[in-house]
Length: 116
Image 1 (cartoon, helix red, strand yellow):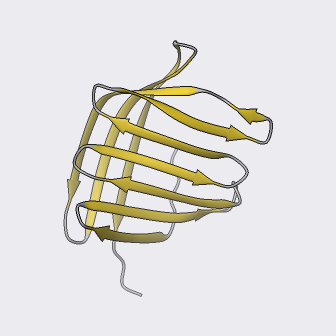
Image 2 (cartoon, rainbow, N blue to C red):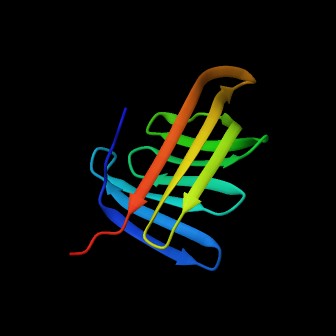
């Protein structure tokens, strides 16, 4: 599944922040990147906070209109390339709940600056 969004990219100290609106979730998504981790924060109908750190399991927040679902992300691979005008991050992770594997996932985030 591929999604494309127009958004903003800022760099603060060593952290990159990508943010965009999500119409289908009626909210906003922020993606924070640094040399050790990727974090995705979604606010809207569904709110979540997922942090990816290589070779670690991290508890995730996933809140729906029907309640919270406890989850853990276990990141098996993570790589990134960041330049002055664009970047790319790849994350492979397992999503677990109650210590049972739900799915194996791959997340690829690419961005580039555009002149308007």
